[in-house]
Image (cartoon, rainbow, N blue to C red; front, side, top):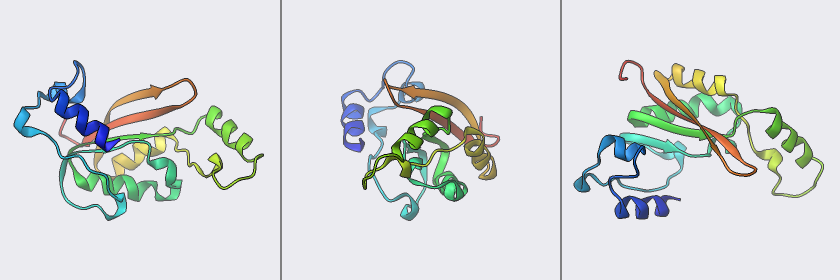
Length: 151
């Protein structure tokens, strides 16, 4: 995903109309650096931190520390997507429990939207935008959050 994002950014540094890059009018000399890293070992300061569908691997009791860690890294905003705790996903997990195997979907953690938003507030961020991403069978929530008072 990181490689594809870098390739697309180089091919169209201004981004598509309506995209986050287009809203900020990136200049060619402001090309972002793209890389993947272990979130808990990451340090530094970044304009924007994107964490796409990673929370599915983190249990709810670690949500506050994960969101807080991401918030410390992001100067201007954090973009976070996650599998929301809905009846649909809860049902899929229950069905998955009926089938044995090491790659079970039952290990996927679902998060309540209100709890994710509360974790941002606790970290000093406010959710400024909410979106739904969807395919035929999968959907996730995407939150954009900014430090309180920066909007």
